[in-house]
Length: 276
Image (cartoon, rainbow, N blue to C red):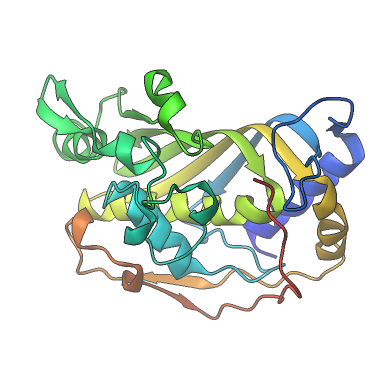
């Protein structure tokens, strides 16, 4: 069983057995037919993944690594807020007629600031600090900019990364205000594990531990039967992840810089409805 499967199973069981329903509240998300999308949730879930042991990817349901990395690079490398720069349609529901998601995600990472080290954006500041001041305890990114929330197609769910170097090991904390366990948990975990691996490689470091802190960890009402079916499955062992060792510049990575070796996963029948 992979570590990602182990934590996914535990979290889902805890949510279903101990979680709190919001059916007595007026909620914002809606299903495609207009019905309110209620959830059962746990508060304050913390998961830890050791990237030196294995790459965290679910096998209970197939995950599409290259699509996930394409989205990650759209945000962190291209710093784009236009779905025309993205290879998938995962953001279509939140884009306007011009394809923009407003001042969200990649837009925020591309804004330049006057750091003590010079004028640059948040991504370049982290990369600069990792190379020149790895002992720093100030390597924090944040895209939950209150000033721009009203101009965002979707307010950031995964909103902050804290990077920390111990010896030659790069560790990180991903803060997430809201996590849809079925559709997004496995996706976000493998994305930010890959991000840490990329940052470590171009900085001459070794990837260490990814700590995932989730404030509102939930399962949507219409997803409960799907999750219950997943929990009956027998997971496989984690695959091996190959990442192109010749890439030394973060901006040179592509989705094809990664390859899974020996990945076995269960298929998920039918389309999963997404609440918007």
